[in-house]
Amino acid sequence: MAFAALPNGARPTVPPTNLMRFAGELIDTETSLYHLRARQYDPGSGRFLSVDPLSPELVDPSASAYVSADNDPTAFIDPSGLWCHSVLHCLNAIGSFIERHPVTVGGCASASLFGYHASAQGSVGLTVGTRGSVGVTATLGGGFSATAGGPPEASITRGVQITNAPCVADLGGLFYDVGGSGGLDYAGSADYFTGKGAVMHGPVAGGTVGTGNGAGVEIHAGPTETGTESLGRSCK
Image 1: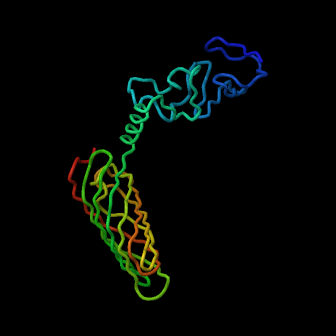
Image 2: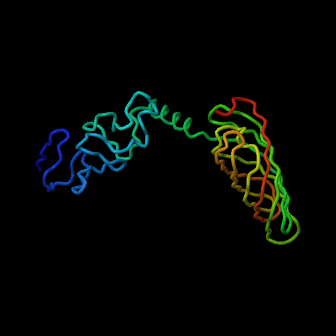
Image 3: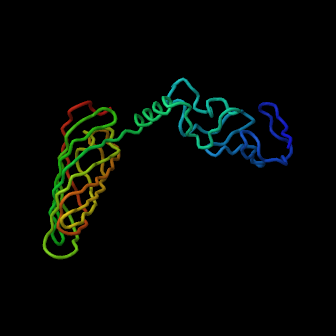
């Protein structure tokens, strides 16, 4: 099978009989764009129409965000746009991505009491942010609950919390929580909460999963109020 080369920037004047072209990918005869999975390539300008999902700028700020496969498509392919050419490159890219998309991760202990239609819960935790913040959180809340029947139920759990807050101080204030727990001697719990960050004032959401001791099955929903004490870097 023969492949005819086109000058850089040239577009085919007639629909090609072989649609497999640049980097072994398909060309769209209506738009004259190459479909390279992660991005569209325009041979007229010699450029991609969007940046790589794993942009080279994450590693080298001076690099163009529109390159592909380390600027060497004859030797490498990158159909997903997530290729990195070395372990160091991958680690730097992951670190830069986390810096741009910060999260907080923490451990917490919770105690809850649930009646037929009302609940009360509290928790304390030690939380670390990917941007260097460290702090302690304390949360109190209550609201509506529904149990599986029987007397009021209680649970004590220990778990892990993950949120999209850029720092620990942003977890302070009013949030709305929904969750549930279940188990007799051995219990599991899960909660999801959302609200507005106390410092950066952006939307904050997170979740907690834990295990411990319980006495029944319940679901609950209601407002919570969280106080924070930062021990490290402040929000940026």
